[in-house]
Image 1 (tube, each protein chain N blue to C red):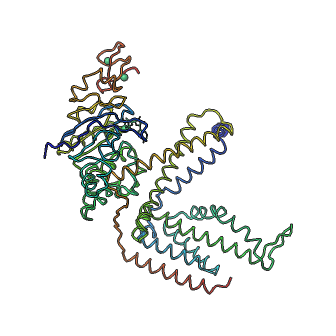
Image 2: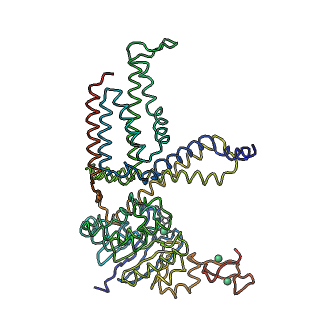
Length: 276
Length: 285
Ligand SMILES: Nc1ncnc2c1ncn2[C@@H]1O[C@H](COP(=O)(O)OP(=O)(O)OP(=O)(O)O)[C@@H](O)[C@H]1O
Ligand SMILES: [Mg+2]
Ligand SMILES: [Zn+2]
Ligand SMILES: [Zn+2]
């Protein structure tokens, strides 16, 4: 049971409207309790992959399985399957805006528990717990769409936390957050991992990969999965990272080398640019 | 003088259409979505939303049925009193209603003024005349609409929108209707917000003044972008709902509680309505 794959994708391709290619021949496997990062530059297909994993889109070719069952449109017609899958897997969208559609924060966080048919007392408790653990109790009566970007992200997380999924799918969770919120979010992901949850994070932020993943898949700009490995292996493969537009090279200076020079780099705090 | 000569060129950069549009969208966003009055302490703010919705519907019916001007005026005065005790700024409340009034009723009321047959009140040149019956009809229409609008505005100003929606749900307005109303509200917000942002970003980039044709082209292009955006957004929102277990019908939960004040208010309002309907049916014009 414990070594049953959470996700098993074989040769999955997907194109929007059958024309715009977004994912090509992707094969990947995620075990229960694993923390996996999906790395790729803008437009490489990360969000698409997560939506396929969440059973929101279905492959044009190849097979997508979760918990040993094929994810197909037909499978989701079945209420029991839909119910159990939705309860086990939670997706935090890249754009919090689209995830927040309820009139108040409280309703937003209560949405999933209510749809999943929990009892009233349980709904209230789940919602209150989620609000407390994300420290947004004060926002409970506010309209979600009028919050700041960081607050929106917290509400979006709470709206998934409230149904306590086994699997977290996170689409660029740190994008647009200030440094303090970013490290708070990384801590949140680490906590979920420690609690035995499966965490799949799509990102192009190389800084956080080491902390949030045990294994990394890299998607290139042609929408192919071109590499997988430990964060150490992938992050030291500069050729790969440059080819996938995840790392760049230009003239710069830093504290320990004050003369102008050039080499591949990412913008780590320890490698700050002194000149642009 | 120097201040005005500095601000003027800035104003001119926006074309007439664009200026008007951005004015309207900005005012709308501010006035529909500001919930600050709903958060004040006042009589109506402390009443159960269900009672408010029911009372409003009852009073609307009374206004609609009344054949007595005095009753309608009485009900209008009642809205003023309620606004007063609910921390709604008076001038704001009255102005908002009477500024929109010519817009809504003017077009309908004006012809009635002239074409309703009856004893002549004022004789105008060109053979036009205002009849007594015509004047009464126009006056009725104007007062009915402004009283109704005042009631609706009072409800919306003193109740957070989500409570209005919930109250509708609890009062057995179909869930799907409430959901659509809620989503519409969100789209309108997003639309207005996007429009305002687009105007702002244009303002920050456009240096010179646009010609009328250029302006129209830009606005048409923006409208296209906006439509694309809202289509994309509604698709994504639907996915996000599905992801959290939505199966085509929303489940909601009410958390309202009726207290003594709510019962008192409900009974009071229904009494007022009853009396108004009775008096209104006796009324001679
Ligand atoms: N709704 C859509 N309709 C049509 N094409 C789309 C849609 N969403 C994405 N695409 C296209 O599919 C490809 C992959 O997009 P996707 O959003 O999965 O990329 P991503 O890796 O998440 O990028 P980013 O880092 O910018 O979020 C892109 O070429 C994009 O233009
Ligand atoms: Mg994306
Ligand atoms: Zn360097
Ligand atoms: Zn650089």
